[in-house]
Length: 188
Image 1 (cartoon, rainbow, N blue to C red):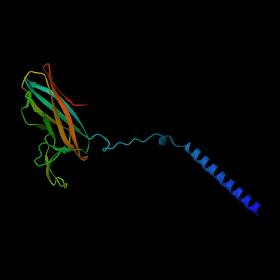
Image 2 (cartoon, helix red, strand yellow; image 1 turned 120 degrees about the vertical axis):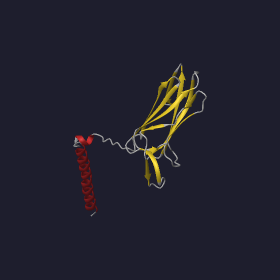
Image 3 (spheres, rainbow, N blue to C red; image 1 turned 90 degrees about the vertical axis):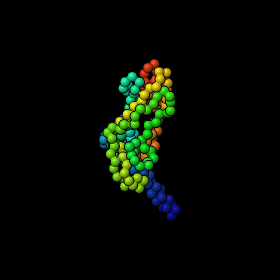
Image 4 (cartoon, helix red, strand yellow; image 1 turned 135 degrees about the vertical axis):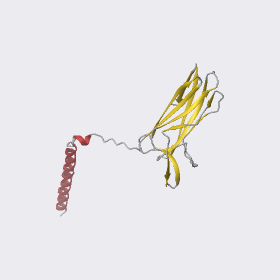
């Protein structure tokens, strides 16, 4: 009886072995028949992964000792920020600051083009009127050179980009050297 039982166990285990080998062979053969379009990796793009904006700076000479600092913000679709023309008490509003210096002075208010329009926002953090900037916008800050000496002065552009809700701080340098005024993003 022991022999009979042993024989049956041996036959059963051989059957399991051949099933395993068939399964592995079947899987291997099906892996080689993968359609070509499924072999190409799929690349997905989303607004969340993309940068929400691009910032460009330039300095235009207007006349004699007057210059125009130009800041253009190109927004990605669905992104926005609070305009400096908003009347409410908002944190993260668009601001452009230049470190105090006796070499350079602002001669006018910051000009926004196109000018943002006030709208009602029912969001709990706003629940009121706000000027949202939702499109590519240019800011112009007129400056006056107050001397002829070479200098470098730092500045900062700051705003909260929505809906990501991150405070963006972009440092820049204004330099005047050998009669030429330049601006560049600091650290880039």
